[in-house]
Image 1 (cartoon, rainbow, N blue to C red):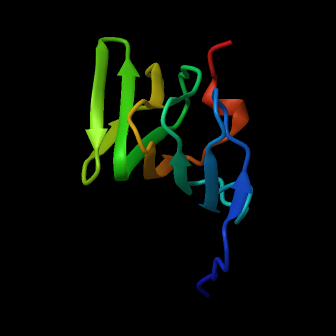
Image 2 (cartoon, rainbow, N blue to C red):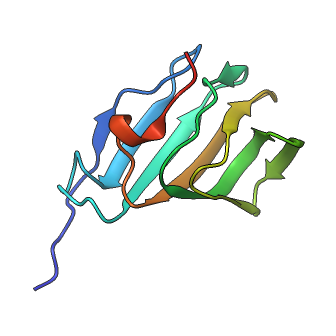
Image 3 (spheres, one colour):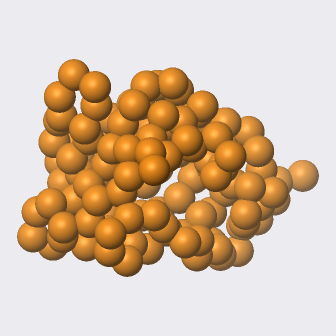
Length: 120
């Protein structure tokens, strides 16, 4: 039987400024370990520590721009675009532009603090 997700759970974000993360599907809200789906809203100037996660991450930018740093440089992902980060590669996300950004992040398997491996 399908399972209705009536509302997301707000989870704490890493980074230098407050960021909103509403998890719809994942370990916290639906007790799903195979995938996580979260709606993110981050302010201008937000940045998080670099990470080398054990999961693939698929990010779809809805509004604004997300900067994605990686070991060979960086790329700017604008509204209407998406980016795929493979498990095991170093990556860091930020939203430097005015207005910040709004985006959807999907992780396979689901995001967890034990498997994100953030820089210190």
